[in-house]
Length: 457
Image (cartoon, rainbow, N blue to C red):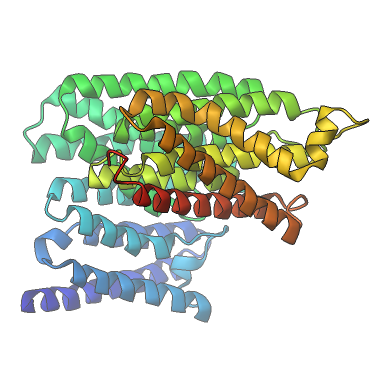
């Protein structure tokens, strides 16, 4: 404990010196604020690489992370430390950075290679991609108002490959071919994480994504790694045609969908990917039917909308992988996916253009009928096949739990639509959809726990 205190004090001094150096660079080169910010990022990350060598307790790292975060937040409010905050876009990366370091240390401080690679990718790849992409990038793409460059993403890919491949070769007995394949897969995926990240959230997605995927892939034989690479290609082959045909997603949304699908399959198994695939197909069918029947443009969604749809399923995927038990959260996972599609269907019905007194008009005018149709259709389309394939017994009670969960999501969303003007506010609507599905997932967990005597988990 005494050695940790000494280490914490010494490292605190180093971090303060890094911040002061960033201020000095910012004053010396006022025309290039990104250089000062990335210098602080790179030096702080390089210092964090030494944590497993000098610190034993995660509480010490938590103290350092909390202190650094407090300085960043106070400096933003007090409008000093311009080297950290003076950037031409909204970014909370300086706050996310110490959080990511602590979480990775908590998860992987006893596995030095995992900690080292995860922090190194966040530090080195991000820094070089930002600096080189900013200076030489000419092919631009937009992610929710943030402009990025293809050149920067290419730099990020190659640097990430080296950040994974070289430590695996030097710090583990891993075979060279296995190391190369793992590095290629992680570089592709993490580059996707970085490409769709907004407001500095890549400081969370990149290290955590690297850690979880690397943990999974290091524990498997070469043949499985090759299989994972094929899975990634399958994800891309499936998602691109669906997205292009429906025109629902822009490039950033498509990348996010591919990453979610692949993560579900690799971190869990095929049966976790299957509900997502069925949801994509149903989404395409909904878009094809409603695109000329609603007053709102339901195409061209970017990653911002997808985040609200994918957040809860992604959390459940990572939670299942962390506890290494895929059955505990499987019903809540399906409920989160089916609930999202049910709420989308219900909203499309509520804004549908109708004339006369046909079935569409009756469906739109009758709230209970609309909820029943949307909830039943979504649950049957998304849940039945996965349950039949995945569970050995008690499928009927599991389906009943899912039906109730989905109807709870629809009921909560309907109440929110009555309370708030969600039709006019797209992003507010996505947040309310997230809340509705979150309530449904909690309810599904409670019902599952209540029925656990009859359900094989």
